[in-house]
Image (spheres, one colour):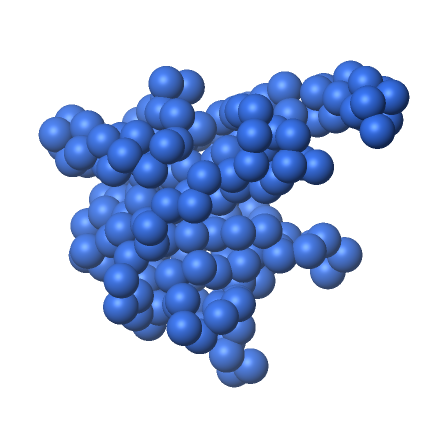
Length: 186
């Protein structure tokens, strides 16, 4: 087993170099109690995040809408190197008893990744977390502070980071998403 680990870790590290990874399994933060998905639908702007290789641009926004088959259409848009890039995915409620724990996939061939809504007031802010265990040796973290507008007061961001920290999520690598000079692309 040690030989496999010694061989796999150097191969996996480049894949997570633009991510935030930590030793050990994923934390299990509390999610939004009594989450109402229909109130979450609509447009959200990314305010801050942990590094993610698939989000390198600016003016990042997401839109969530119900499809006729009761899945959620997820449309993410960003501007990168002067060009608008748009990707569409699907989110599902994986367990009706925990509706704030969604799964999201951006490819027919990829499994659903966790998309957990830790807190939201539905009208102005949301705090989202995702984590993937790698052989339970380490995990890759993603976290987002979202807003219904492109700007959030510093105090709100501070409290969102406190919430993440209380749930054993390292916020030291979080950084602000550039939302300056953006036109809505959705």
